[in-house]
Image (tube, rainbow, N blue to C red):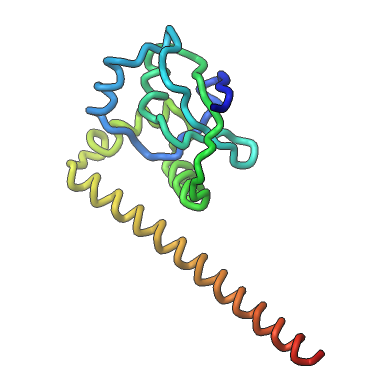
Amino acid sequence: MFSEFYVEIQKVHPSQLFINRTKRLRVKEWIKPETHNYQPIPVKKYGEKLFLTDGHTRAVCIREAGCTHMKVVWDQDDLDDSEYLICIEWCQREGILSIDDLKIGLYRMKIIKGYGFRDVRRHWYRRVMEMVDKKLRVASFQFSISRKIDENLNTILKSH
């Protein structure tokens, strides 16, 4: 088990666009941030910033309870960093740069824009397809570069 530590909530950035309202209400029933009686929230560092890899709903509930710090732990899971970086890019594009912004995001899709559940789901599927497309383009580029390197290497080896 890795050591947990405390960090200012405002120094941790989300990696998802919004949280589920019903899940938020359920989490608020059992989480007790004032007693620190919750699992530490996993984070990763990209560049100089800390990002949540999970626990966004817990982070919002901890913030809503008036806490300024939360218990975190370094995420040791084998994650696809490229997917997280794409999600972080989405958050930055949408102006979701802090836990407080994520809390607002809870309402953004459904109330402010007037989207219904199907619209939210369609929006999310579009985002996922954008991620898949981006990853395929990167993989295709990496494959073409790899093939070029192999061809050049073969040419060099044949000439010696």
